[in-house]
Image 1 (cartoon, rainbow, N blue to C red):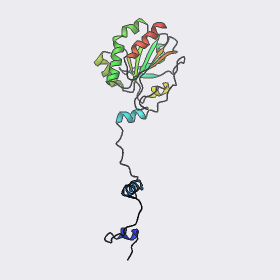
Image 2: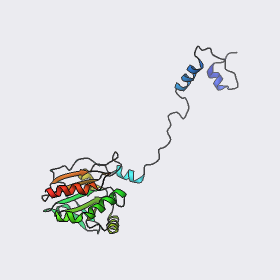
Image 3: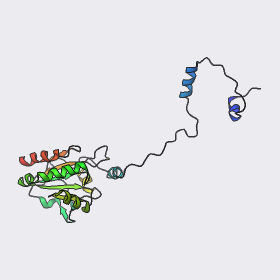
Length: 215
């Protein structure tokens, strides 16, 4: 009595009649490896692990690159400083302003950058310039950060990253990390220089001082 492969599959106790083939063992093995799976699990994927909270928050900012450019006048903003007082950009018209956006308080790179601005603060004052740091941290975080490292300049809380988006600060690592970008504005509020360097935060200070000394 002959059985087809389909009948044999439904009746595993029945022997399969061997089929003649001209292919050798290696060829048959290759054919098996290349045959699409008929398993019920074929095509299913294991659920991906959720992204870290900081990455989800950064990716949700919808950052757009390049809205504020050299020679342009950036949009005004009003944000709270580390003491909870509202500060507007147009308050500083008539003097050069250094506005630097950084990812977050208390991170290694941002701490180095803030302390480098602190250590060179007298040079910025000599150039007649104000220094403003902006991140998405709240005022309480900024206050603790400023007190811990004795930061003499203004830190502004851009919760929700509204100003970051309005200025078009580009993100890093495919938008998963908030960008580190510094703007130098002249006395008329016009952008004279833009410097972006995520992984060498201390370079922002020397580069901006060079520009300020030439204004």
